Amino acid sequence: MPNLFQNVDAYDIGIKIGTFNLRNFAKVGFQFYDNQDPYTQQEYDDKIAWTAAQIDKINADIIVFQEVFHLEALTDAVKASHTMRNAKIIGRDAVAMPPKNSLVPQVAIVTRLPLMDEPNWVINYGKGFSVTPPGYDEALSQITRAILHVAVKLPNNIKLHVLGLHLKSKRPDYLHNEDESNPDHLALATYRSLVRRGADAIGIRQYLNGLLQKNQEPCIVTGDYNDHAYAVTTQMIAGTGRFGKSFYDFQLFDAMRIQTKNDPQRYVAYTHIHEGALEVLDHVFVSEEFHPESRHQIAVVREVYSLNDHLHQRSPEVSDHGQTVAQFLFKRGAQSTT
Image (cartoon, rainbow, N blue to C red; front, side):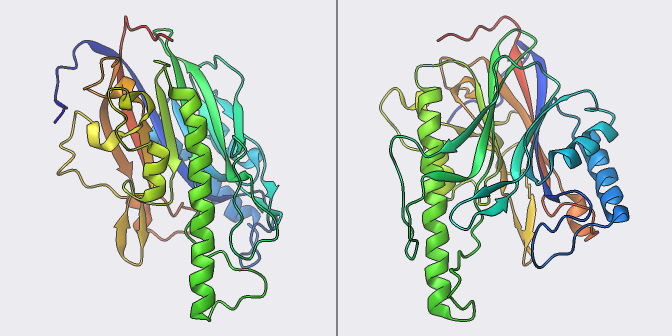
């Protein structure tokens, strides 16, 4: 077992990263779903105020947001906050995506740290890979919700890669001629959704393989994974599996498991409540540069925690997800190598 409770005195540059599912962040009067009414001006104002206050509670250097229908709405919330009102906002409005060409809300990243490269939207599966779920007329070749990749400059001049994601939900994927009350159709629709989630995970992992291999620049992949840390799709993205001596070079690690401040066996966190069950769906995964057993370690995961008190409020302006926040410490004299 790695020594998680090592001496962290040598690590004196601290940053925080948070992930925040906003829950249908859209402008006034916009019909984001057929079965939900658009926001009134008062509802919008309440949502902006609550979100800004939550941003201040997170008080992170970087926040990855999900469910952005309108970047203008997110901008309103960020500008209304105290801690990030001057931060850079990277994102875009909802995009029509196949197979149904419905509008899909997007990921956004807000950072107080300077960018080192142009942001990159990871849209396609890559490497000629495609998948045709049962009942589809055409193969799919794009990730359901595009991944946003930014590279920021740390105070010690290290380049840090941050990927924001929102994996497709496990909600059954019905075709137009299927009946939701038919258990056979339910099974097919659930399998169809699983196929799409698996394909998305492969596309993300393919991109990470190109980013992580033989590259000692630290990387954090965070967002709404829509499943627990040990789910198959989560582990596919993490690249779980040993590849001889080089397995650290490919793999991502759950920050919750390698944090140094809290005992990961006793610390209980949750970011979502489904039918009374407490779940962690919003994760922070990190590359080998954060792992205590890697010879390339230049940082430690100091603490990972959840902001989740609002999940018990049931107020219309709050999110249905808790926020996961991770604190990292970097060595001042560390140098990333390629």
